[in-house]
Image (cartoon, rainbow, N blue to C red):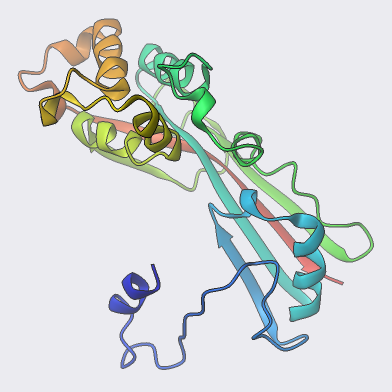
Length: 227
């Protein structure tokens, strides 16, 4: 991961940028009150907050800011039936679905938009939560402030789901290959079979995996300043 980051941020363009591998709870290479801003994207649900917040309080300067952002499973904003099917598979504890393969309690924290992560009272100020919950009546019909949306093909959506940690655990256990690799069909193939049956508009496209759809992610942004 560090090599990937370094390859896209040359020293010539970013001379003051360095990368370190460390746990968020123990940033020993940073001095006390030496940091203005701490940012974590789609990671804070893994932190041990009982250890994290004292460490954040140590490294941040007075009134320094922390910003934790995370996003939920995507929503097909024009297709409520497809969204319902996807979310049922993502949450069901049936062995052939994906719900039981998520790591907890991280999964629940993301689903709850980081409301479970609470900066200790008395040591943090200006705590804000900025959230978004997508609607299914078209783009930008949800509630709150949207940060993440994209137009993509259904084939790309299938590949996106196959990046989920729950899918990786599902495949490790069941050892079932996707159809495009010559297998009988994995859980993602099954999900999209059901979604195509439920959404007639998807069936009209000659090459259905090339059909483009609008998707949005529900998200939660936690902001706080050190006292």
